[in-house]
Image 1 (cartoon, rainbow, N blue to C red):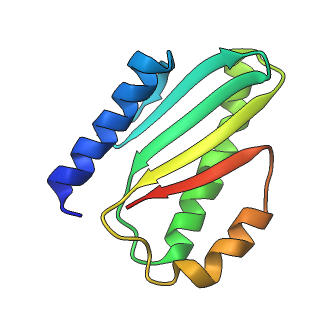
Image 2: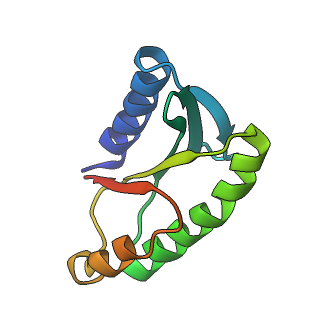
Length: 120
């Protein structure tokens, strides 16, 4: 996937969540490559982090995931909610070369209810 297509999918996905699914933009990075969205539901607050990334190795993706997990409790506190359902969405041109071998161990280390998606 080229950068233009990656950028298009990134913004189209965010647009879909905001316009059609009624999510609100909670926070965005200065370079706009990471956007946090939130929505109140009966089950709790749904928090979606959408990130445009290019990681060659899975350990860089793991570090990014750990940073997102560290940020989520502060966001939970700022939102004043009891339960967070966290989705971490990565949009990338290519998955890390060693992703298949490392992916399972990452999914087993859950801090709170979350799902992991890679759009390629």
